[in-house]
Image 1 (cartoon, rainbow, N blue to C red):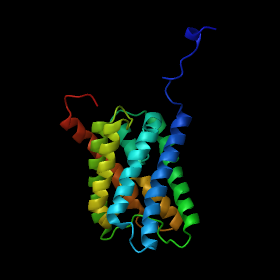
Image 2 (cartoon, one colour; image 1 turned 120 degrees about the horizontal axis):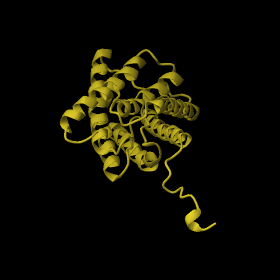
Image 3 (tube, rainbow, N blue to C red; image 1 turned 120 degrees about the vertical axis):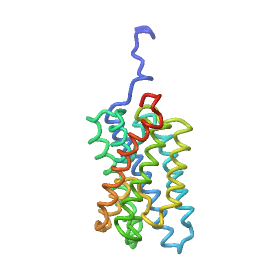
Image 4 (tube, rainbow, N blue to C red; image 1 turned 90 degrees about the vertical axis):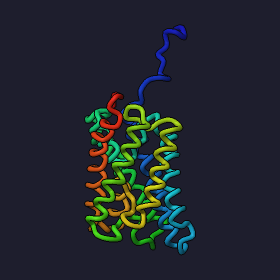
Length: 232
């Protein structure tokens, strides 16, 4: 068989199974490193600091995009997956699998944090510091801004390239700096689900499951108004 007769697999699209493993690993990395930083900060009396925690989340997302963006798109967030689907960029048949993989990654990460730090109480979970309604509105706005940026810098349903990693990581960082002390700046149902389930602190979980999804969906018509001369 000649070289020209061989099938070129270098440009073949990733299999769904590869995408799901990438989403699991990317979400695991985000939740393990991000919430782990919160737990360590609490245990050490604030040595990491709020700024350090915000940078940890932003830099972790940036690294995950570089690592997995070309495979699965590196959504690592059910709200982002739903946002891509609502924009028409993502096959709806893949949405359930992506969300299951993301939530499984988050739960596994929180279980690992619990194993390493059994004395930790909240495991870096997100809980409103004020009212639930305040956190709900804030999470909608934060996720809307995040998804709007993602739609603007991504290709199709993939967060890939230098611009995407830097821009999305920056949004995660400055939104965490701004709103972290108020709502936890989750913007990600899986990120909040893992610690809440493993720690058994689910009384405010609905805020972080519903609000980010609403924010992501609401970003789509706004994106179309702003970029009306470009196909979504």
